[in-house]
Image 1 (cartoon, one colour):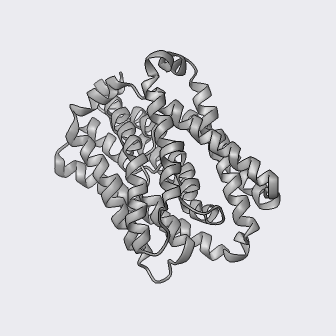
Image 2 (cartoon, rainbow, N blue to C red):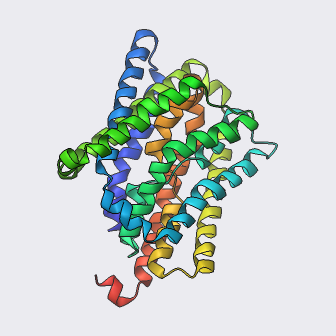
Image 3 (cartoon, one colour):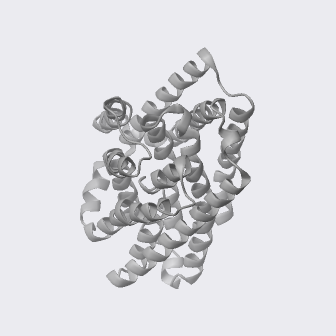
Length: 326
């Protein structure tokens, strides 16, 4: 099962790397760059519209009943992660756009698809995972930009302008709310056509990545970064992931959560969303900076898939017989 799950993600990871290579060799320039930018914006709007239509109100109400678990997930996602991010960016050898990228990574909401999939593999509380991941993404539309304004301003790494706030509202929040309000009429169609959401999800990410990295390459991205910088980012992302995985395990023990809920806290609390992070970065930061800022997120995304696949398999192997046989 693990192999089949990772096989789904492997082509996308390869496409993501291929997009970076393409943007490095053939970055969009002039009018073509403008057209690619507009296409990426359209993809982002459609992506959040479909995610809004996908979120059921039943899941929202069901989630309210397990509020302690969901508060723990949100606390790790939006409090513990940012605090650790501030600690990393305070290191003397972590500076400039790379520091901004690491900090931005820690401010993002959790993933949805992979959090739920890994919870299912580990025989955890899938319903609670759906609620926690959905709440995290819903709140992230508002909380992440607020944290960027608060923390990245004070660290000198960036900030939010009036134009950014307008873009967030128009490109992210309005489509999401519109999709959710139209769910009674289009929700069933969206559910039946999950492949469409996958295409829009991945397609919009690839468009934004190509646009962002292309703009960064034009500004001299690969003359400013060294192999040492990439290795450093990878090591810091690995340290960040290890810290949060350990933290979620310890918090679950302290809260004396049932095994199924502890799994939800670990998988939903330790993840950061590439699907949300890429469009948000495109809205919040200048085009020339987006490519560098997204590097830590892209590395962290792959590391979390590998680590959580191993952990989910171990949970599944150690599951009680009555659970494992479900």
